[in-house]
Picture 1 (cartoon, rainbow, N blue to C red):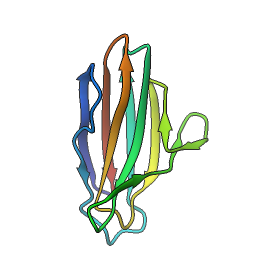
Picture 2 (tube, helix red, strand yellow):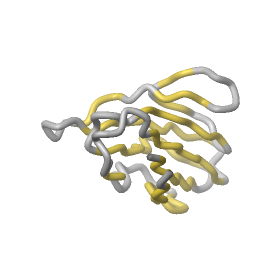
Picture 3 (cartoon, helix red, strand yellow):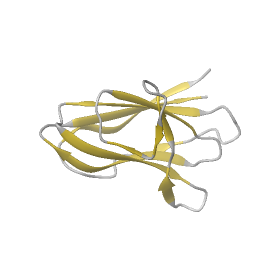
Length: 111
């Protein structure tokens, strides 16, 4: 098992796309990315995006590991999300809103 750690956003207080996590194992049907969202923000919106082979980002349906619910975005903090990334070129977490503090979003590609 290979695990690659990644930082999408580090203690940011403004909106932005963040750093794309490149998927380096398109041959593995079991490849997943685990996304952790932490911080002091009192309000925020994070949108999960997947990069296809044509260079286009589209909504990515992720599963919250605490609640088991799925979504393409979250307004929470102190959450962990999981998504299968087989066939994708990359994953990005866009922050479209943040106030009252900062957000840190990290990821781990597990092959």
